[in-house]
Image (tube, rainbow, N blue to C red):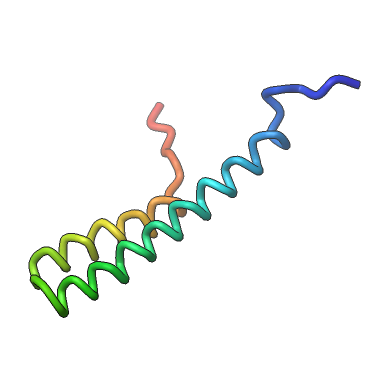
Length: 67
């Protein structure tokens, strides 16, 4: 039986891996932001922290149907 390329089962693995990647990147940016803010420049550290927080929250948001 051939696999269906657009089935939900084939897409689940990619979505989960993308969510994991965004979560890891967000956590890394947040940790780097804390380090940069503590050692080098507080404003740059805050920028990294905000980007990291956005990347951490992004996988948990869902698109809204506004029709």
